[in-house]
Image (tube, rainbow, N blue to C red; front, side):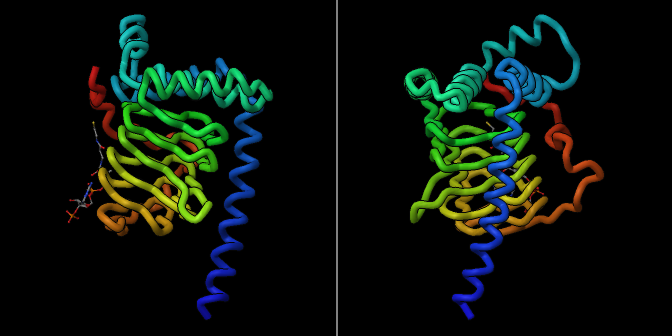
Length: 222
Ligand SMILES: CC(C)(COP(=O)(O)OP(=O)(O)OC[C@H]1O[C@@H](n2cnc3c(N)ncnc32)[C@H](O)[C@@H]1OP(=O)(O)O)[C@@H](O)C(=O)NCCC(=O)NCCS
């Protein structure tokens, strides 16, 4: 019985992994500048609310983790184009200047936002969808040679650890300091050690849109 359940879980994971690879190809077809612009405009909305303006853009440029987000996109773009030395360089620069270690090969879709980058460690096998938001000191790592698969519109709070062959469903929220070792269903909130689901939200009207803008509060430490 346990063996047949494991086989079902593996089939689910394979299907999610195939969808994630298709999403990587879609992201890779976008321009580097386009990806960076979208990341930064989402971060500006998250940190400072709606509205445009030179002051807001300048503020964003000097906000914690913005440099790290740009380094990651150049690293990712370099890999897609087989520019291994450049990929390696930006991976190292991110570690040295931003204390942010995102493995070469880790794939995030469009709209990848880090509020703070310090202490962020991400395994190279991680596959994540569009509109993923991370706080500081988040670890997304491997266990038994397998890494998490993360859906669209996921938020991961400060200090949270997501490890092993888990699937984080679309729209999930992971609480600060949670340790996630089991799958989290779509639109659920998981908190604690080990993380448990404490809240389940309904599927939103437009699940393909970015869902992260209820607050728009000024959450950036500059
Ligand atoms: C989990 C989180 C995203 C809120 O998600 P949510 O779906 O709105 O969940 P709620 O606030 O309704 O909380 C649901 C329950 O989980 C509890 N909870 C929330 N966050 C928790 C956490 N990190 N650890 C333990 N329990 C937590 C709440 O107290 C609540 O419990 P209750 O139902 O008994 O009252 C948020 O609490 C969180 O942890 N954010 C991280 C923010 C962060 O990292 N900030 C750093 C800024 S520098």
